[in-house]
Image (cartoon, rainbow, N blue to C red; front, side):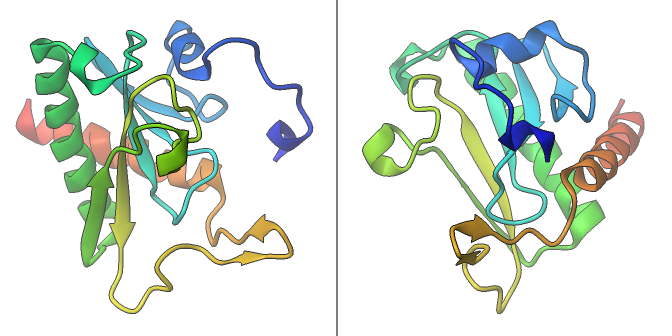
Length: 156
């Protein structure tokens, strides 16, 4: 949780991440040709993942056909990995376009994949200004890397 006390990086955090390898520190789980899979640093639930294009599209109309194709492929891969590792009963999949819609990083379009369970409390509750997360992000990272790796071997 050292990231809480760290100074925020200048510029777009999503544009800086592809420079680094996949690792638990960056939470980048997988890198494709046009997009990458990353854990949400402030997840609604354990397993909350985002799929982010490398380019910096500020609007969905700026995403190219090859980028959309890979974003969709990575979405399916992510859903399969989450099903294998977390056994959710369903998913919320979508984009928050603009700050008014809840986008934390509003100027770089990205897709959220959020596993859901019957009877869950809709999203993690916030108590005293703190979101409660039942699983450490490094544990989630390790589980997702393992699941995606096994799926790629099966599908490859």
